[in-house]
Structure formats: structure tokens, C-alpha cells
Image (cartoon, rainbow, N blue to C red; front, side, top):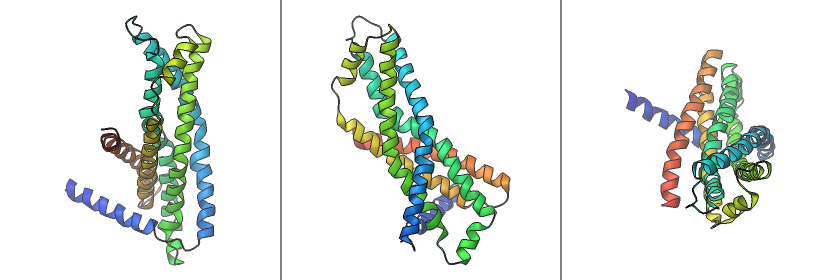
Length: 249
């Protein structure tokens, strides 16, 4: 029963994505909606990214320095560990898990509300490809904005660690700067950006799927929103394993 339901869900998801990525009927309207979604899903999420990245960069710097305060370790170890943690996992994977809660629930509840209020049915009656009209701009906008948000998170995370060196005696600014510059690999930034774009597609498409097929009432919209956040988070983690083995192995 579980396998049959799982395969049915995968099949329905693929059929929905086939409809989503059909050629839009009106490009001008679709592009205009995409720009609005870039602001709604991307720019409006910068606040939480700024706050979390600054504090997590500072916290990681403090904890790494205190846990690795060993005279046998070089002085740049703290900055190096903070930088690689931010670049490889936090600014891409962890931030996407956080955004899955904010953006994913937003997409699922918005589309789910349109479903139960029969707005999607009205679009279908008028001959509009509702999946393409509603979901395509959200997926494209979120995938486009993800690299920008990841770079902001990386920068602010490193600035959070830098602020620790300026405002305390836990680590000096010179030691921290030496660490974040030591043996820098620009490929890590590329790797993180690619991961974030894949994660952005997963979050937007899975959330849209659960919202699009939310039938019933307000309670069902809440269930769809919960399922969207949980399942998109699970698929983000699974794809993280695959991408890490593929791109870093």
C-alpha cells in the first residue's frame, strides 16, 4: 500500500511538472508575475537570512575557537573551519531548510486556498493552464533568487565571525582573517550555489504540488502546508547527499 501510494504521488507530481513547464500562453504576464514572485519569495525572505546568518557566523566562531583552543593547532584553524562550514553546508543546506518552512508553507497555503475557493477550477474553465500560470513563476523566481540569498548568507556569516574578533578577546581579527583566507577554494562557492538552486526547485515544486492538490476546507490547506514543509525538507536532505557525493567525491 505504501509503495503504491508513493509511486502514485511521484507519477502525479511528474504529470504536474509536465503541465507546469509547458510553453506559457502569455509570456508578458508570466514574466511580470515572475518578477513579483522574486520579490515575494526572495527579497521578503532576506530579513530572516540576515539575522540568522550574522548570529550563526558569530556563534560558530566562538564555539570553534573555544572547542579547538589547542596550542598544537595553527591560529588560522577557527577562521578556516567557520568559512568552510558556512560555504559547504550552512549557507546552502541549512538556510534552505529554514526557507522551506517560510517559503514552502507560503506557496502551499496560497495555492491551496485558491484550490478550495475554486479559483483554480475557474482558470481551467476559461482554458488557462492553471499549473503553468500559478506554479511556473514561483519555481523560476525562487531558483533565480537562491544564489543571491546564499551569497548574502555567506557574506553575513563571515561578517558575524569578524564581529566577534572586533568586539571580544576570544579571537583576534588577524587570526580570523588569516583563517578565512587560508587555502580558499572558489569551487566551494560554486558548489553551494548549485546546491541551493536544486534545493530551491525542490522546495517550490513540492510545496506547489501539495497546495495544488489540497481538496476540502481550511483544515486541508493546513495539512497541505505541513506536508509541503516536511516532505520538501526530507527531499532537500536526500538530494544534499547525492549532490555532495557527485560534486565533492
